[in-house]
Image (spheres, rainbow, N blue to C red):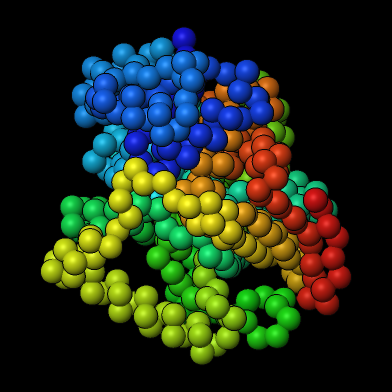
Amino acid sequence: MTDILILGATGLTGQRIIQYLASHPQRTSFSLAIGVRSQSQDASLRKSLGLDESVQVLQLDVADYAQVEAAVRNAKVVINAVAPYWLSGTNVVRACTVHGKRYVDCNSEPYYVRRIIDDFDYFATKTGAVIVPSCGLHSLPADITVYLANRTLKSVYGPQTQLGLSQSFYRGSATPSDGSLATIVNMIEAMPRNRIEESFRDYALSQVRGAPSPPKQLVAPVPFSSGAQYGTTWAMAYTHRSVVQRSFGVSQYMLDNARVLFGGKAEKEKQEAFRPLAYGRTFSYAEYFVPGSGSYLSTALYSAVFAAVFGLLLFAPIRWIAKFFLPKQGGISSDDELHNGSLELTNYTAAASFPGRVAKTTMWGKGGASYILTAYMVSECALGLLLDDASLPASARPGGVLTPATALGDVIVRRLEGTGKVRFESEVVSVDKESRKER
């Protein structure tokens, strides 16, 4: 039985995940296997990544369910880095669900997540499978900073505290991965328009609705900023919002339906476990990117350029030209490209129960390309599910299609901070900027 199986080993993200896990400080605590499509890829990967014989290599094609099932049956946790997921991810999730396994991926495709929720969420609760999509740069930072904001506010004001408007502002120089860019092109070319529209609707992935999301703002002021700074709606905002709202929905649903789900005898105990995790029905979420200096002019210009580029990609000849500029699968970037960039995400979440009180939560990440930060995140999610079972939150216990926040919670916060590449800080601020730091 293999502890961790990695699929998608030949892509940039997959290679970085393998390298990270193969040299992990806890390497002696888990066994590792990778899936490749041919024997020639086996030899090539071993040589290029310097893998020893302790890493098992399996030959399989994710398009062949029988091959996938045979590999998954003998693994405890599966990392799927094969993108686009809409085209190649379902067989892996199906096999993990059937056999009650734990699964993580780094997808940024809410229409794919909607499909696996519809097809496998209920089934997974019956087999005990824990399916956790979107564990990479898209959308773990947004999901976990809101989770920490909720924890911070409730540590100060009590578990009954209801959240209000939650706003995230991204800054940074991390560049998109090959899989992310391929996903955007695939969405435009291959996805039915109605599927895209459904998956980007408010609370599309949530079984519970909170307050409506605020109207889209092309230029939004950054709260509590020193000097006027602004953010704008960006490409990943709706993807991240869908995962954050899924976290809201999972915990709120379990709190509201504890008697039905767990029986009358366990109702009070379960409500006490889920109340600190639930955001409350007054919760809403919005997200922005702060370009450059964050001035009004630079933000408005970024918004206009982004709208123009996305509009051009709707035309097939432009997409055909753009494909020549996409990163090549399997390439290895230089150390400067990998390590000299950064990401900063600051979330401001209001306490609806205590007007004027806001949790300011910041995540800093070090890594120049998005697949580097993604490799840290998805690997530590997998290790958390494998090695830290006793510390997982109550929302992970029933299984199902979950999120980083509902499946891992504090476990992934501790693990990411332990890498030395990611740091979190959360504090309560009021309108007069008095603060109480929580971590």
